[in-house]
Length: 136
Image (cartoon, rainbow, N blue to C red; front, side, top):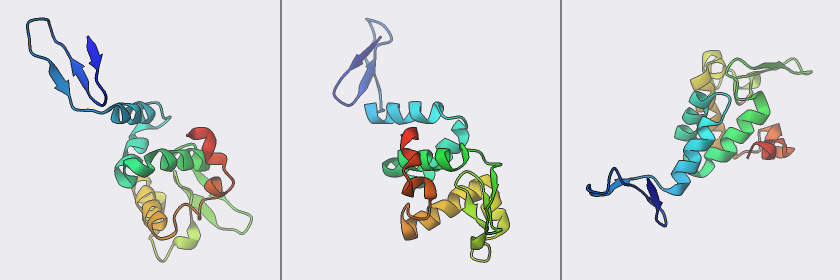
């Protein structure tokens, strides 16, 4: 049985035991549900760990719009550059980042986070054109 208090959930194991407080807020429970509902929850969890709670939802939505949250996503552009991974990091970044960083799933998320820290979401077409919104 669960009793909802303003920001904490309390689980009652039985009527004779003291309540056991589950230290998760409603927001954390909702975020966990979001992560688990993704086509690739392991990648979604890593994205949330990297970008933090405040940007987690947008970061997942951008990656979903860019690649379907797929680590193996590769896109070839008309200008002969290539986009890699969940965040579709463009090959123009090779030199600043290695190909293995960009093409490796964890490295792709790490690279995306570095780019995000410098430029916000502006480098991602899915953010600029608003296509990420359907995944929020």
